[in-house]
Length: 186
Image (cartoon, rainbow, N blue to C red; front, side, top):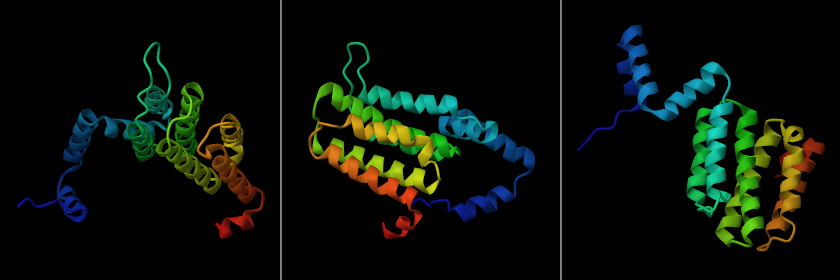
């Protein structure tokens, strides 16, 4: 039977190492694990724009046509890109940006290729609501209002009740920004 190393046990073992040994250990993690490298680049340099571009490109490659190649539309890959980015970024604007880009690229995909399916729209609606909650909570609504509103406009005529749901969500969260007491009713 294998024993798992708990966080408490890890901290205990790391506390017995010297600063030089800890620096060496972090250097190995940085060198061997791309997510650790991206995390430290974001945190220590305070600029995650190149990393954000990388994760946005993953979304574009899943939902948008590239030359003669049709998009794969793998929701799991696209959602993982958003989740992974949220783990490494400390920028509230960048986190909001990646979530909104997920929905924008999904909407572009369906506008280009026609109605997709209910799970696809459910995923887009879920991410849209997550983004709305986030921008309201982080007081970023005005910074992203144009893009959030454009998403609703761009869904006009899409089936599965998609446009109606996004309109409802947008109006609900916009009201929270305009009337903060509405925050307590959701």
